[in-house]
Structure formats: structure tokens, C-alpha cells
Image 1 (cartoon, rainbow, N blue to C red):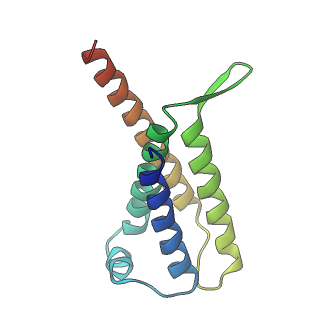
Image 2: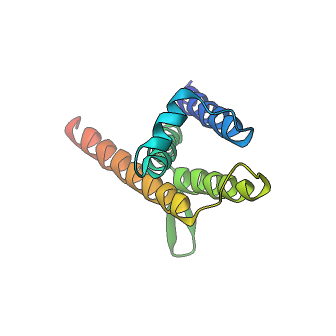
Length: 127
């Protein structure tokens, strides 16, 4: 049950990607294109929000590799975001941009950090 919001939002992002890949731009996508840095803000918000939802769904699970302690939601979303950005190289209607990837990374990091901070604060107050 706790996975439903993140799965629905993931499906929404996939829908947006398919629309962009097939050059079927929705009204909102056209508006965002007209806003300076709108595309970057969109990347930040979409992938960041997805990371926050997955972080909650996974109960803030961590991945430990030797001395590294990495947030699992961040790994999942960044893997998807980077793969999606590279797939744009296969479409004439899309453009691969490192700035988009940077926006993805900043969004994921920000929302993972924010969701963990909020969780610690909520659990601390409930004790």
C-alpha cells in the first residue's frame, strides 16, 4: 500500500517521457518550455518528488557498501534519471543535456535530504 503513490508518480513521469519522445507535447509542457529554465525546474521537481516518495515507501532504507552509506531511493531515481537522459540521444526530437542531469541530481538530493530531515523531526517529536 505504501508503494502506490510512488508507483503512480513514476507512471506519470513515464507518460511525460513518452509524450516528449514522440513529440506529443501537452499544454503544460508547452508552457514550461516558454519559462526561462522551466525545463530544469521541471527536472528538479519531478525527479526530486519521485525520490521523496520512494524514500518514504522504502522507509528511508540505506545501501551500505564498505564505508559508503547511500540512500536507496536516491540510487534508484538517479539511475532511472541518468538512463532516461541518455535515451534522448536516440530521438531526433529530444536533446541530451548535462544541465538536465544536474537538475535531476540536485532535485533528488534535496528531496531525499528534506524527507529524511522531516522524518527525523516527526519521529523525535512523537517520542
